[in-house]
Amino acid sequence: MNRLKITMTKKQETMKKHLFKTRLLSFAALCGIALTFASCAKEDVAQNTTGTEGDNDKNLTTFVAGDEAKTRTSLDYNSSDFYWEAGDYIYVKDDNGDLKKSTNAPTSKVASFNYKVPGKFGASASYKVYYLGKNSSGNSVTISTNQTQTAPDNTEHFGTAGDYGTATATGSVGGKVFSFQLEHHPAYLVFQPYTSNTILQSCKLTKVEVTSDNDIAETYTVNTSTGALTGSAGSKQIVLTTSGSSSNPNGFPLTNNSASVTTNGAYMVIKPGTHTLRVRYWVKYVAAGTWGVIREGTITKIYPSTAYASNTYYDMTADLNVKDYDGDHYYMWDAQQQYWYGHEWWSANKDQPVLNDYSNGNYAQNSTDPRYYNTSFPGRYISNPAIHSCKDLPNVNEMTWYAAKGDPRWDADELWITMGHLYQGGMWFKKKANISGFNPNTAEDGTDWRTNVNVRSWSVSQTLPDAADAGNYFYLPALGYYTSDSGQLSEVGNYGSYWSSSAFTLTSNAAYHLLFYSGRVVVSTLSRNLGLRAEALQ
Image 1 (spheres, rainbow, N blue to C red):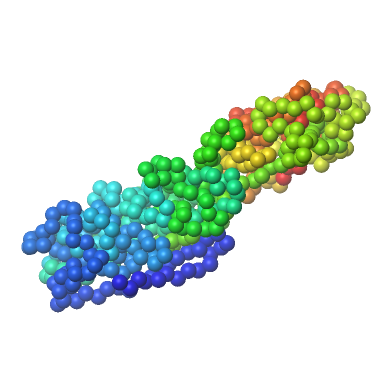
Image 2 (cartoon, rainbow, N blue to C red):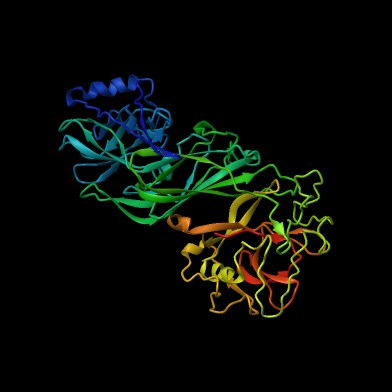
């Protein structure tokens, strides 16, 4: 059989779209019966069916699904051909305006099939055909919010995921054989993640979560008068599960360092339209590391507003590389050198603890060590800004704006790496350019915290920023801290603790910092000899 090839147009760096081309079949009425037998003689026409066979039943009309690209319901990625799958029934609107379900369906994957349909089909030379997927009630179809794929580069789930199509079957008035070409109506996303990160190559792809600024899932009902499909009850999110099957219990491999549809190609059926998409690739670390944790989390990609056309599939290639945060940005407040200078985890000494609850004594013990905190104290209620490692950090007033007006949103799932280990947990904040009223000279309450005594906390959202708004936020990981009495690493993945440039005005051994965790964000004081992150914020 000749396979119809696709054309491919560059959409953007990580996305290509593939258009399904079609040649309409023209089956003349006079050769209808001959066509029926010729089709059955083809190698790829199924003889096994489910339901009533009925070739000799006068009350059954034959509707022939031909052998060109648009006539099938599962996709061959390389050729763009669709195939009929086991359990694919069709519905045809008869002379009385009733939707009649075919009495038979394929029992295996086939390129062409002869459907038998009850009802009255003698008054017209053409009839409306509907493919409504495998879960249809007979007059509706739903693009599902929960889709499941059991093996890479496999589209057998399309029928249950919400694939649907329509066609006009043609023949002759009073004839018993009609032919049709199915026109698929959804759009299709083909996810092809890859990575060169050795930690991630030990992971599996467990699911793909897609969120749009518009509906991408939908329920459609057939209007039996007009034949139109009317949409309702939409959703902005679809989750495609790729784990849990007997062949891929933990998910699809991530062993490839370039896009490979055969390795982990994952297909999603979506409602066509213009969408800004946030795609969260859920990956699971299945080889437990030193800490003994099998970790599952997300790697997020944002795709800009794009028109996703019906009957078109889009390559969604993605380099899954997580942010690697170094261990060199922990400082005592405004120290001249970082907390583990000369004892870094990557150095010959390797004294720096890299896992929660591990400790080492080779940290600064007194002010003669340049790793020790800035001991400056000009007096009470006098501003005391940093002059060394913390001088370019936000001051305490600015920290309050991030906490109170920066719309903090906890993200328990996004993955990142620090000091050779995989973690998750962090907070999204609005960038200061997107915070109305942001002012370094006064806190969000109108006072100057640099010369006053203030401590406050705020609640946080558990919802991620919208995909279309994601560019207005920045992410801070929960990188924990080193304790003041033992050099112990604590709360990585649970707490984020970041120094400000402002010392506390009442004592010589405290400074302001920004603290956050899953439920709150806090601006308060801590002892200067703790090892917190010193990071400039956006």
